[in-house]
Amino acid sequence: MSAASVRAEAKRLLALSLEGGAVSSDRVGAVLTALAKSRPAHTLRPLLRAYLANVRRELTRGEARIEHAGPLASADADAIAAHFTKLLGRPVRPVARRNDALLAGFRVRVGDDVTDVSASLRLANLAKSLS
Image (cartoon, rainbow, N blue to C red; front, side, top):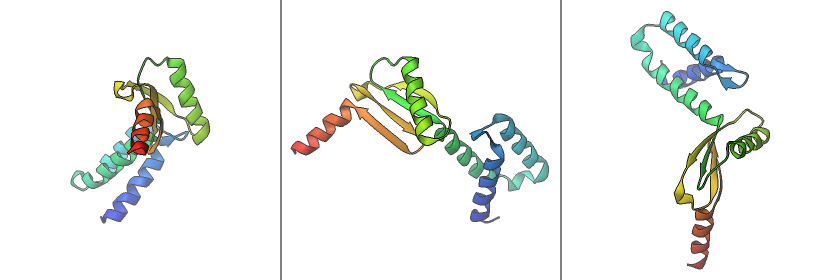
């Protein structure tokens, strides 16, 4: 199986794993069960690696990873996730993590998109403009 065909097959398997636009653990289980029954185990490694990478990527697309400097109320995290859900047109759930290096504000990553409204970024930009 060529690398291109492995990627294409993994993409097709990911599509089978989605339910309502999000990864479903039941569907992932069904895909893995079907693969185990239909193919010899020694041929599955490249396909499973590509499938795992696709599932991980898809899971991060559904998370608003919020780094915050101070306390963050769950209502605020939910509001941030709701903003990105509306903006991106797909369900996004909040995952908050404290990061004191931000000084103040927050940074949100949804998939590959990053929104940074932290004091540390503003100070870094100010330092660059003064040098």
